[in-house]
Amino acid sequence: MQKIETDSNTRDKQFGQRVEIMKKMVADLNLRLAELPGGGREKAVAKHRQRGKLTARERIELLLDAGTPFLELSALAAYGQYDNQFPSAGIVTGIGVIHDREVIIVANDATVKGGTYVHETIKKHLRAQEIAMQNHLPCIYLVDSGGIFLPEQARVFPDKEDFGRIFYNQAQLSAQGIPQIAVVMGSCTAGGAYVPAMSDETIIVRNQGTIFIGGPPLVKAATGEEVSAEELGGGHVHTHISGVADHLAENDEHALELCRSIIETLPEPEKMSLDIHSSEEPARQIKNIYGTLPVNEKYNPEVRELIAHIVDNSEWHEFKSDYAPTIRTGFARIMGYPAGIIANNGVIYAETARKTAHFIQLCEFRKIPIVFLQNITGFIVGKKHEHAGIARDGAKMIHAVANANVPKFTIITGGSYGAGNYAMAGRAFNPHFLWMYPNAKIGVMGGKQAAEVLTSIQTATANKNGQSTDEKNSKATFDKIRDQYEHESSAFYSTSRLWDDGIIDPADTRRYLAMGIAVSRNRLWNEPKHGVFRM
Ligand code: COA
Image 1 (cartoon, rainbow, N blue to C red):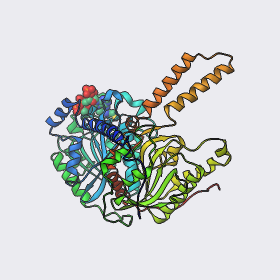
Image 2: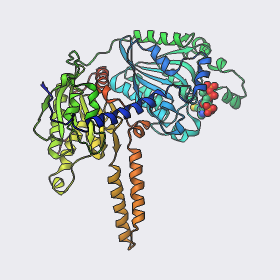
Image 3: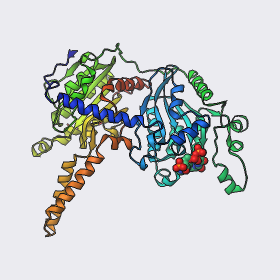
Image 4: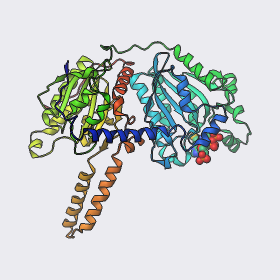
């Protein structure tokens, strides 16, 4: 491996400015994250505690091995939507370690509208199950939910990827031999009753957890029968009479202890073998990573400098360093784990796409996970390039990315636009994880470009109809589209809608990637297999 030496301008005049801009963005991110546990809903949290219950995040902390990290997913889901009444979309999900074993946790937050589900709550729950499937991780459901948030039923109930998909996935996970444990720590109503009922083992808390298909008001309305929640489907009922649950816990702490005990009984997973070394810090100071990033449109950094802040010892084996330099490719280590890195360094040309497809094949045959560092405006456009068949070469890259048999990890470090998003393992290409930096932007094209396209179409249509174009109108359309695109392309807009797994501090990149690779070893990777490459 060679030390990454760049003549890039990390010490240029604007370096300090870029660091300051990114510091502010990270501080803003941290502020928004800090508000999540209780901000604005102190009354609901106090009521929850009065009932002797722990909060969702406290439950997770107790469940995990002491001192181990929790890789929280999409913490800012639903941010800025529903008048901010659904922090984290009312559900906490993430990966943690119990008895040295990686598991995925899905914990309802009953202090957020009774733990009910809006569209993003479901997306988050389903995403956690998808990660469980992709990585063969045991699933733990800490259930405390009133089911569907009824005013939103049309966006939550009927479609393929709606509430019902949770239970479909449970059956699929079970058939794949992936263990699922439910801990019923509160309400578990209607469809929600199937979460514990479909799990391998279920724990329920006495005088606190309830499981029923229809709650007491519904029973009264339907049959006239009057019954209390506890009598209908409380802990005693389900562990002594119905058998729907297997273990009766005295309180939250006891329930979590029982859950840890179940995890202890699971067989060890057969892990994907990788050549893992001991971790070495990058030779660069991590705090300087901020200065390497495209925090504004004017700065187009040489991406090797960013890579030097991410990889062990700031060393890598670059592949085709002198060819097609608008993508940098190379092998390195991240906290000791091997990684093939593919990083944008400009627009994608035909030779760039071919070089990347070749490099992906190397990663596949060597069984090395791939890290995509996305900062891409798209593929090169223009007559010369169309005539040379850019679409055909781009297709090779897209084939290779889509079918890569090794885990993919994508970080959007700057812009993510157009087909460049797809070719660099955007969400549609099933990366194991996709994270964004706070400065990242995502959209079909930039705001200015979209505004130009739409105003020129408007002008052409008016001309065709023999109408004159009003300059004031055109400017109004231009401004409206540009502003809309600016708003919708922000990292916060994206993460609110779960187009990613969360916004991360760039200084934590190594930690996220290393955890991601570690998690991906829980399932054996397939052999390389590709479709037809058009030559
Ligand atoms: N849809 C919409 N809102 C709901 C809801 C639902 N299914 N369940 C609860 N909420 C709201 C409440 O209106 C309340 O809102 P507010 O904070 O704006 O006042 C908030 O969630 C908390 O509910 P509350 O009843 O005060 O809390 P609780 O902790 O005492 O009880 C439940 C929580 C979930 C046990 C209880 O609200 C309940 O039984 N809900 C209905 C459950 C149901 O029948 N679901 C079937 C749908 S599949």
